[in-house]
Amino acid sequence: MSGLMAPLHSVRAGVLDVSYFAAGPADGPPVLLMHGFPYDIHAYVEVAPMLAAAGCRVIVPYLRGFGGTRFLSADTPRSGEQAALGADLLALMDALAIQRAVLAGYDWGGRAACVVAALWPERCSGLVSLNSYNIQNIARAMVPDQPANEHRLWYQYYFHSERGRAALQADRRGVCRLLWQLWSPSWRFDDACFDRSAEAFDNPDFVDVVIHSYRHRFGLVPGDPALAEIERRLAQQPVIAVPAITFDGVDDGVRSPDAAEVHAPRFGGPRSHRIIPGVGHNLPQEAPQAFADAVLELVRSAALARP
Image (cartoon, rainbow, N blue to C red; front, side, top):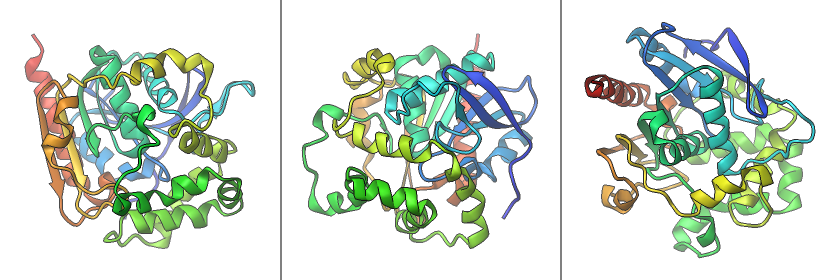
């Protein structure tokens, strides 16, 4: 296991002061690596050095509610909705003067990358996304899935209740460690690996952002009014037209693998779909070489496509 991702930097971006790790040459092709819930930037502890060694400018930010990232104003809603994640990523790119980048992520971070790729394709030269099209269809959130899939979402229904909020508030490490185990049953992480990431859950806004995320996606709470237009656009389920590489892990405890054709209508550009055996939900940390290779494939394709 590699060590801490340090030193960290910070930049004011939109409504946040974003804490992030950077590696690689400043003039290299930009890559943004986006972590999920309940993880942190150390999901990319192996991937980031690989990309930096290949000449990429690598940026790995803490999402809102995680690590050292902070809201600039006490008045900003602690929203975890998908529009917020996408807007945060776009604002970070603006703050770092990154006009166009390969965007790669999973879970919440993959959703942020999908949002930017779909709504601002001119800013995305390529997309790597676990679970393929990761933009929520909130209008259909109350349509039940197959029972075998519904039971995997117990934690989301738990967070809809005040009992679930209280549990996360009282023992965020206990809840999150259980999710790690359930979502990646074949991943043998140790205490040090979990503890390194769990520090990110001590963020004072962690519980509020997490609870809002899982309630908003079911239409149970309103979103941030400032993000209503982005949510309106996402409700149209926009097609992602940029070059994409999508993944599923065979052992993913959140979502079982889908055949490529299941999500094909939501991708309008070239797309390669890859199913990785022996891997769960935290793909970049469980299979860093496969993830890094996919990012580099898109980086090189973008370089060849430039006039």
